Image 1 (cartoon, rainbow, N blue to C red):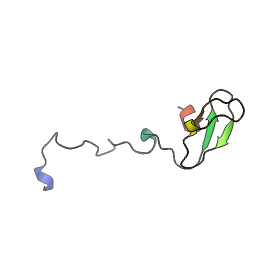
Image 2: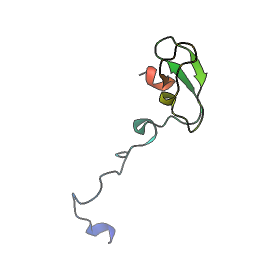
Image 3: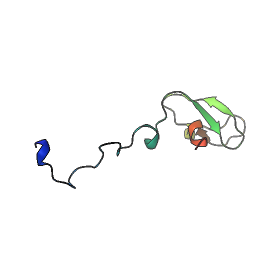
Length: 71
């Protein structure tokens, strides 16, 4: 299909930032920390492991990504 022949309302609507890029999609990159929302313990984030899958080594509460606490 040529560019000028597109029918409005027929696309996926993900152009010009409409998709789930970086932080809006939940990806914060490989660095950073996982933080306990209860006691504040910080541990380095491991790439490929979601912070919410970790338990705080001090109190056992679920960890959360540091960037989410700053919002």
